[in-house]
Amino acid sequence: MSDTTVDATTPRAWVGCLSCYNSGRLVGEWYDAADADEVSAATLHVDAGTVARIDCADLWVLDHEHLPISGECSPAEAAEWGRLIAEVDEWERDAFLAWLRAGNYSHNGLGVPDAGEFRDVYAGEWSTFREYAENLADEIGLLSDVPEEVARYFDWAGWTQDLAYDHNVEATASNGVFVFRTH
Image 1 (cartoon, one colour):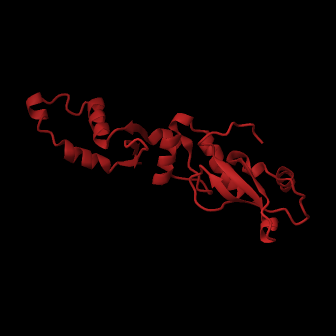
Image 2: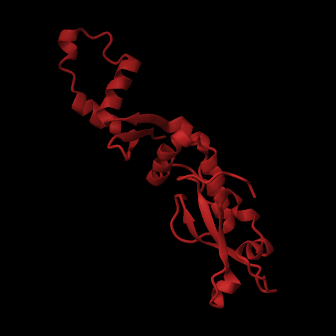
Image 3: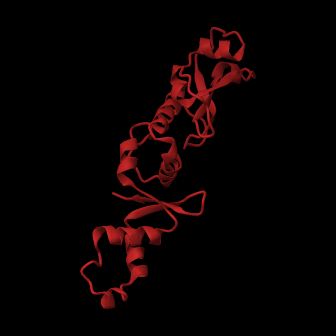
């Protein structure tokens, strides 16, 4: 297991013994999600202060925190998600989780995307999508060769609306937006 410091966004998994659960005993412990697939039945029971029986071989993640999935999952799936989230710097984590919620990504067999894909499509955090569109127009020189007298009649609302078809926009906690280019 890793000695990772747990903070407010560290993905965690509550790994439990299925045999104990099915016999009416709740035996399990919280672990860093990235390490969930390394937990053995023996380790789980020692950490929980109980003794493993011979039928205590199957483990399952019965609860989790800060993973972008709902419901129970296998320890392997929790570990995949935990490792993926750990690949993303803490300052990008809110944007990354918003991108995952949007669901516009390709994934492996466990439904886990590639963090590199996130970096390729992430266009930043903006106060509005219109602010992003205006910044993009400046960057690409959209109106650089157009006289000011003509540029003032440019249909910003229409252009921004059309541009939105090629982007996913997710709300931020601070009333702004995360912008992601689509493929």
